[in-house]
Length: 292
Image: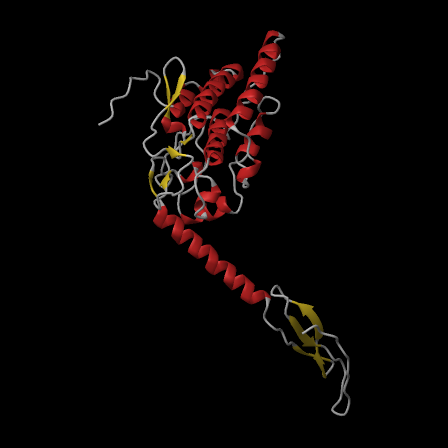
């Protein structure tokens, strides 16, 4: 049993959704900066959280990162085969059996930035299943549906880049968020703060989608199924691409064959023949040089 302090404002999503339109951007950036400090402290200890999401960030007078139950040292050479978490917050490389890294936590942080911006959880309107895993792996990210302070959206997109090496570090994020916060404070003093534009695309969601599961759970089986399905689909597409196509048409009663020399994806030469209006005693010849 783990005994934790009482956090009066609950977790991050409760904090945001309870008063979304009245939380100023300067306050959002301040809280985001404090969360970044927590992540810096974790990473400076060479620990990877591995399950960072809004349900693991608790609010009292300030935010705290909690639930380090499945966190591990970044220096460990082996990974537990079981993947555990919430699909929208999991970095796409984890779906491909790559190791968790600090960059995996940064991807999750990018999703938290999206929650601060929209007041909603990522992919709240989708079933969290094999299809969503495949689409995230192939580049799907939550939509940009509202405004934010200058530099915010760009940083968020960098955090959820498909290439872990292109994601910023927690220290980089802290510096950039701090600059945004200072700029927002100056704008606020000038009575020109970033306004939260009311829209049906942002703000707390009142409908419940039972297929969107926001509790951490074992996902290895679902991930393996998704990657197997992706492999089968890829093989099917490749087989279709490298088929030899011999087409026989009839134009004005004359037999038509198509001639085409091309290189398929396996660098193999394939020949389709296209000879128009040839009768039985006509033929053609063409020489091709091949490196064998």
